[in-house]
Length: 460
Image: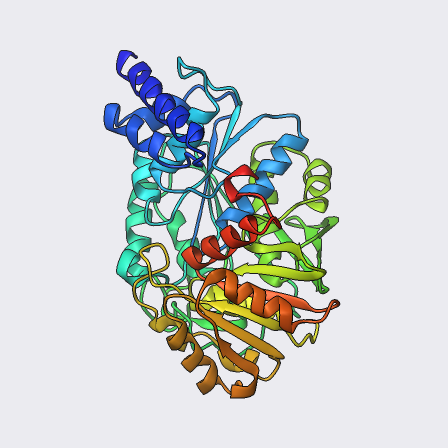
C-alpha cells in the first residue's frame, strides 16, 4: 500500500509538471508510477466497481474502446479510459492516475483500457480484467511484432493464465483470434458478420492465415471479408468458425454511415446506424456491443450510444478547413489500408488525397508494407494527390506503379505546406482524404491544430 501510494504521488506530480508545460501527459506519469511500483496497474484497477475491460487487436481497438466507453457512459457508469490512444502499459497507468485521487482511489467505476497487442500479454499478467476483447490480428510492424503466429502464441499463453471470471470477447471471423480461446477456463463470447453480401469468395493476397492455426492444414473459405477474416473452416481437424453470440445479419453502407441489423444466436434483435462508413466499422461496433452485453448493459442503451458516436483522432475524423472537408484516415498496415480505402470507394467517390508516410518507431521502420496494400484499386479513382512525409518519395513511387498519372501527383515537403497545397487545389465542395501513418498523422493534425482547425488530440 505504501509503495502504491508513493507511485501514485510520483505519477501525479509528473502529470502536474507536464500539464503546466502544456504537454498531454499521456505516458510519462505512468512510466514514473511503474518505476516506483511495478504492480501499479493491478493496484489501480482492482477496486473498480464494474471491473476493467481490455480492448486489443491490430486494427479497430481505438474505435472499439471509444464506442464501449460511450456505451457505459450512456448506462450511467463512469469510465476510466485511455482515450488519447496511449495504449502501452505506461499510457494505461497514466490514464488511471488521471482518474484517481492522490491515494489511488478511482474516480470512475469501470476501466475501458485500449491495449497495444504486443503489450497485451504483459498487461494481462499484471491485472485481472473482467473482459478481454480482441478485434483481429493482422501482420503489422514486423520490426516490433515479428510474425503474426509468434504474437498470437504470446497472447494465447497470457490468456491461459487468466482467472475463470474473465470473459473473452472474440472475432469469430478471424481464425487466429478464435484460436485464442483454446485453453481459456472462463466464458467466451463471439461476434461476426453474417451478411452474405459482405466480402467475396476469393482469398486475398495479403491473407495472414492461409493455414489452420491448430493443425496447419489449408483453411477453406465460403466467404472472405478482408485478408484472412471471413467464413472459414479447416477440413483437416474440423476447427471452424464458431457460432456467433452477436452478429450483423446485414450491413448497409453509405458515404458517412453504416447501418447494422443486429442478431443474437437465434433472432434479429435490433438495428443501429453508426455515423462511420466502412464494413470494418461494423466489426468495431459489434465488438463494443458484445462487450457491453457481457457487462450486462442492454442493447437499446448500447445502440443509442453508438448512434451518436464521434470518431477518434485520425479514425475517419472530419475537419473543416477553409470551406473544405478533410477526412482523416490513419493507416499502418496492408489490411488496415485496404479496409480504409474500401470504405472510401464504396460510394463511387473520386478522392483528393493528402498521403503521408513516415518510418519512425511508432509507424514501423519497415515501409515495404505499402507494396502489399492494394493501391491499384485506389489509383484509378484519385483526382489529385499530395504526397508528403519522411518517406514521401517511396510513397510517390508506389502511387506511380499503382497507376496514378504524374499530372495528378505532387510531392510536397512540410506538413503545413502539404495541407495548404491540397486545400488550395480543392474546390469548396470537395472532400480531401488525409491518409497517413501514425506519426505522420500526429504531425498533420498538429499542423491543423496550429492553423486553428482542431484542438490537440489529447484534449478530446
